[in-house]
Image 1 (tube, rainbow, N blue to C red):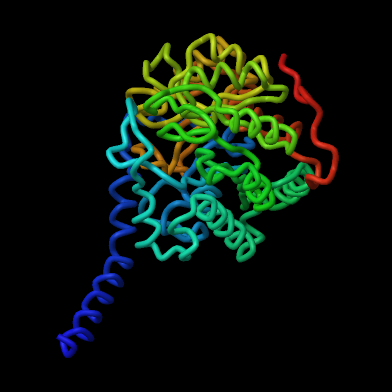
Image 2 (image 1 turned 90 degrees about the vertical axis):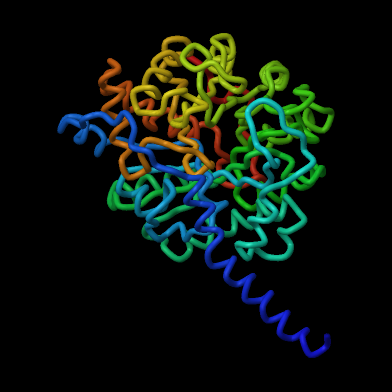
Length: 403
């Protein structure tokens, strides 16, 4: 047996290395699919308009996957080259830290985690294997490292000063993009509100309270209890507002939505969702919710995948945006693709001109298209990001008033 042990260990090592080389890419290809469904013919008018836009998208899970953000991949939905090709000026990159086994829209408990094996096989640091907070911190490190390697192509935005400097640079050099860090579910706090400051210091400026299961902060639309804010959750929301972190209600239960909106003193976002009127579903927003989110001065990002719009295609997303704009006001809607979020979408980031054309076809004016495709996100960030650091006075309540 002792003579066999080195051979067995060698076989296990080879198997691990083979898995590291093959499995992450295979899983990524299976889960992040582009299915060119319902695409529209793009006019020269739409291309000219698109090239002049500030395009922003509120949700992308690229940092979870074993891809170099700076290199163009043959699969998935985004990377810096495709963002630049699609004229995306700002992409919100969200950290995923845990997903349950048997993931579904109806009911998930918190007792399993499919991100752990992905973390291990992708070779993430040992500290990320058992800590959700460390997974979020590592994903922030990945984005910052990419920006440090290519400062002429990628900038990370944390403050209003960062954003102003970036806008001035991009006016001179359009072939660049920016990232803003977000978190998908505050189970990433590991149950400790002190972790919020660590995540803020790492650059996170938008945080979703829940993902696909109830956690220590709040109830999820896909959870078991589907309750509201916990005592910890109320403290977290207050602290987020004080720091200047946007509260994201994507995936939140109806009770959580109600309770956050009742206590919010600053704009609230729903980064990636749909609307009940065009696609009924457990996480899509009612007209009443749309109006109340708009009343905070916030934004609703409409997605590209079937759970958001039922039938994928740019026209379906444009129809949902039309309804949301009619109900909440055109100043309160945006793109929330859910790129690289284990979704099937009709086009990747390089072909976002599809949405510009679909919005024009839906009857939006060029000025309204400018707002929806990114102008609204830009205005919100200019009003709500911390000026330069947490040591300065936090933004005042309702510093970004609704219409």
